[in-house]
Image 1 (cartoon, rainbow, N blue to C red):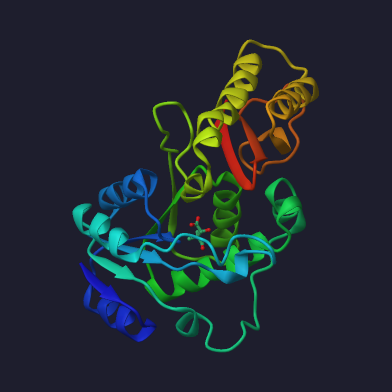
Image 2: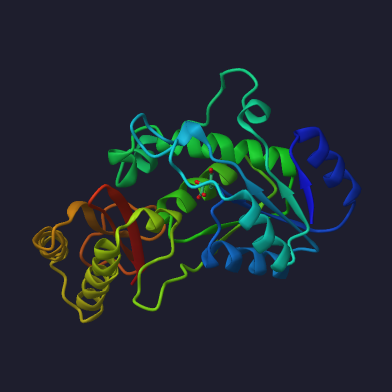
Length: 277
Ligand code: PAF
């Protein structure tokens, strides 16, 4: 695997790829089986796979975990090598933001200020801005993102469509631990007791999805019950919401094509999860 720390270097490598098909998998590192599954899927769409690792300050709000976000570069490189990734672009902040970023991607409020965007103001703006930069730098035919960050995937799809980027956006299925917990770099923050409790988030959204599948249409009640259940077990739920898959807008009771999304804090760790119905 070739490792590139500079934009000039990865651009030169990209130019040398010529007519080959290229897929990129952007990450913030601290890779787990979910990321590696995206790397392997990328191979189905391309001759050359580029991974990126960059912990993007712009998508963290003050007081979030930017400083403590786990940085495990050597272990990440070993995993990427083993997964057969061809190139890694791993710039530092000075390379990505040599001066303060002056232009931003501003996703529309109906996409970026709901759900996670309500609780993490500015997150999707910072995320979309860096993703646009990474796509401009690596010029891929395909880009892969995990469905665990469902709203992120929706924002990226819309950005790519609105800016006519010649990139196919592919969503990879969430990879889970045996007990159902969605794999996430933030799981590493959980204490042993919290780790035992953490699968409840998936259990709760599974119950909501099952109730909808059973034909029950009292969505507000499901959402409230799910939040209450989390609260009763010591969580601080932010939202449990049934939305339309396509645009994450409210789902009138007759809609099909739904997804249940949830975010909740367990101790000091914020976990998110979702399940397509
Ligand atoms: O999902 C992530 O790891 C990040 O939000 C991304 C897409 C790499 C942008 O920083």
